[in-house]
Length: 119
Image (cartoon, rainbow, N blue to C red):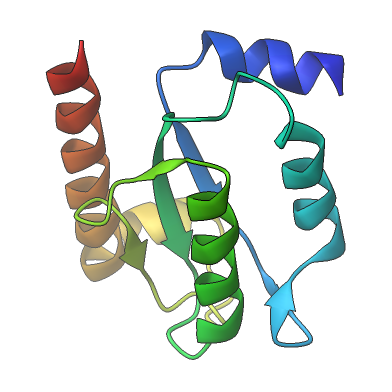
């Protein structure tokens, strides 16, 4: 937990991609967020959300609610949804897929621009 807090304190922003489990946030992801609730590292940190399945809206909505409650700064214009469920794409396949890589690249550019603007 201390390493997570230390790394987050040093980070300019946070990218979160969380799987949906039983129509909600997975247990490990929820636990990680719970560990950060009382700390000073998370509030107002710029956050990009990556949803890897267009039909996984329950976890995404729950994640938005939790992060908002924790005072995270979700950069909506940088947050993306990409269709990776059942695609069987590995990292190289994602990069080679022009549609998916363009969506991710555009989101990352927006995320970095928003971080730079806050400095």
